[in-house]
Image 1 (cartoon, helix red, strand yellow):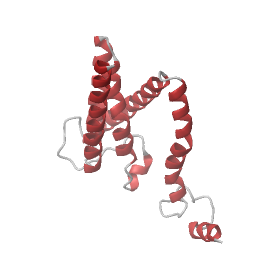
Image 2 (cartoon, rainbow, N blue to C red):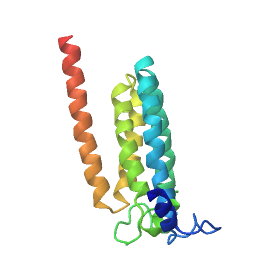
Image 3 (cartoon, rainbow, N blue to C red):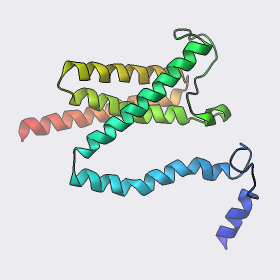
Length: 177
């Protein structure tokens, strides 16, 4: 039976199964986020269909997470290297403990959350909200830059292209409809 082979390859379940980076159970730990997102996606689609304003709440939640994540990165850089010292080899890890073993969880979160700050920037009609969203996007871009990984740079660029295309399409539909 293939499932028994899978569980045998994970190793024995003990006190170090989820703390040791060498444990086979780390794959289960790392995959948890992906499978949680897949399981929650139908509920997000259902909520978006029932109430499109619910997506705005999602955007605000992601923006709050981006703010907290960005503030942790700013504090970390301030403490260890200085905010404008880009010559050191120090790579920001934020509040993501898995970054110590070479993970890219901070990079992935920043690349995922940054488009939400940009969406909030375009949705705000008042100057204060737009400036706050722009500052949030700048904090997120700074956090992305100080991870010194090329992947998030490309991910943010791709997200900006997709978001820009979507905004242009939405503006054309409004003008035409």
